[in-house]
Length: 327
Ligand code: NCD
Image (cartoon, rainbow, N blue to C red; front, side, top):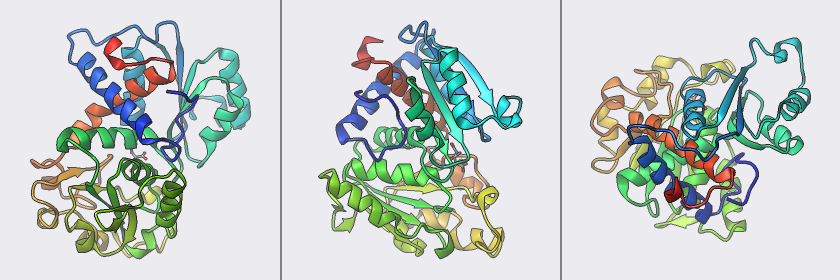
C-alpha cells in the first residue's frame, strides 16, 4: 500500500481496495488458527484515540493490533487531557513524542483525523469522523458482501436509514461505487444529504471509473423505499442517530419505523435471498425488525467478525506488509 494514512475511500483505486480484500482473506486464515497471533507489527506502538462512543470499532482495532503483535495504548476523551481543553494539535504532538507508529482516531468533528495526519509522521487510520467517513467499516462491508455474493461488480446495494448523519453510508457509497456496484441511498427527504450523489459521480469520473451500472447511476438518492429495494442484492439498514439530530427532522421514531423500518415484508421486495446488513449499534424495532436483524439473510454478526480481519489487513499493509500469504 503506497500511502501513509487511511482517511476515506474517496482516494482509493479499485486495485488498492482489492489488495485490502485479498489480504483480509489471509487474515481470516490467521484468525481461524488456534493461536491467532502473528508477528508483523512486533515492536510497533499503535495508539487508539477514541474521542466518541464506540464498542465494536474500538475493540476490533485493539484486537487487530494485538493479533499482529503490536503494543496498543488506548486513549479516550474522558480521562485524557482533552477534558482539560487540550487542542487536537497538542494531542498530536504528544502522540508524536510518545513514539506512536500508528494512530487510530475516532472524533466527533468531521476532518479531525486529516488535521492529525498532516501533522504526524505516524500512519493515521480514521475510525469515524463526525458525519464524514468511516473507511474501515466500508472495507469490512465490501469484504462481507464479496464473501457472501462472490463479486461486487454489477451488484445493487440499497442503504436505508439516517443517511444524512451517516459516515458509514458515505464511505460505503465510495467503496461500492469504486468497485463497480451501484448504491442507492434511501431516507426520508429530511435525512438525505443533498448533492452527495453528484459529488461522488464527479469523483468517480475524475478517477476514470464508470458512473453508470446496468443503466442506473453508480450512486443515487431517493426517498421511495420500494424503488430502493427493487432489485437490491444487499439491503443495509442505518441507525437513526438521535444524538446528531436537530429537532424537527423526524416526526417520531414510531412514524419513521412505520415508513422506513426494515421488516420481513420489505426485505422480500429486494432480490431473493438479498443480504441484510447493519453497521451496529442497532435500534431494534426502529430501523430494523428483530426477526430481520437475526434472520437467515442477516450478515450482521459476520460484519463484526470480518471487522477484525479487515483492520488487521489495513494495519499490515500500512506498515509495509505485502502479500498477506506471508503472515
Ligand atoms: C457506526 C458509527 O459509529 O459510525 N457504527 C460503527 O462504527 N459500527 C454507525 C452508528 O453509530 O450508527
